Length: 157
Image (cartoon, rainbow, N blue to C red; front, side, top):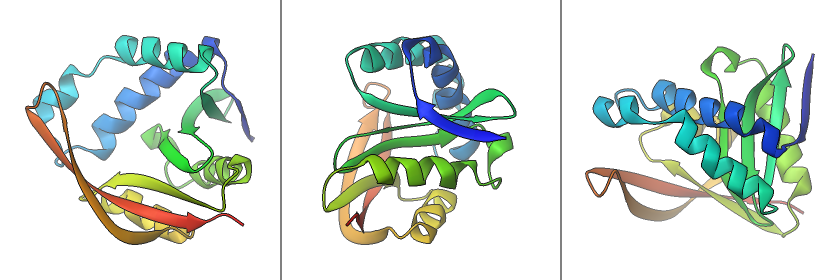
């Protein structure tokens, strides 16, 4: 059985673990392995606890009785949607996505995705998102890792 609910600060350790493990699975071969290996679930959990505690909009998806995914969003932007890799392709991502879209309040929304992440791009296209040709370059790891991202847009109403 699957369910989506609002995240609480108590979910932060699970969210931090999901964030790191999903990055390591999804971005293997796309982002340097040494960067992925150094990701810290504890550091991510602390950041998510602050965000949730400060009223950030975060949902968690439960599958098989465990927190298996999460999404963070605002009125017009999907900031993050990640699942543990063992839950990919089981409908939980779509369930989480649909709840996020239902809770957004604008006429349209955007999200940014790693340009080389074909799996994520295909998922978002299936959910009605369209590449709007905007591009940006982000750096992480004190400027040692460059991420090329592309923006997708979707009508909400």
